[in-house]
Amino acid sequence: ETGVTQTPRHLVMGMTNKKSLKCEQHLGHNAMYWYKQSAKKPLELMFVYNFKEQTENNSVPSRFSPECPNSSHLFLHLHTLQPEDSALYLCASSYTTGVSQPQHFGDGTRLSIL
Amino acid sequence: TQLLEQSPQFLSIQEGENLTVYCNSSSVFSSLQWYRQEPGEGPVLLVTVVTGGEVKKLKRLTFQFGDARKDSSLHITAAQTGDTGLYLCAGTGGSARQLTFGSGTQLTVLP
Image (tube, helix red, strand yellow):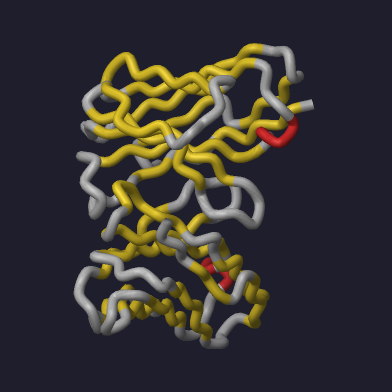
């Protein structure tokens, strides 16, 4: 139990579907992150939120839309995805966005696009 | 862009053997973190090293940060099957505003 919970754990969707990934942290952290993990590639940072405000968008296509209603919850809304978007999507949190802060990861959502 | 290269990419060894994995960069990092990711789970932080030449030990795991803070190594003594996982290094510092991750070393320890 890392204190960061992601749902669903697995998701299969067609390219025209709309779905959302959810992340919740119980650690009292103020910063939350979305990462994409593909085989044989480094973790790719997608979005960073600090105190509910988006501070980083790492040139992510608009078919990925994040939402952070409060410091404990983070969503990733998905629409019209492509097959290359199939990957493990990891949520993480840290006390602040200071680069030396350790990040606590959820177990990820395994996304498959048909 | 700061890049971290990890080697080897894959490593398969027998239980009881020793091993070392490496994390190298041409950039200087102010600190470096090591994570382990087990199948079906997210990465879990093992250690953070911040001082050039620093050595930290975590039971059978020994982490070293290079003197020039451009590289790091992880040495495991007497590997156990429970050490199996993806070992990721991640660096901070320089122009990077966030953690930069390496692509990882996939370690398999066979019984």
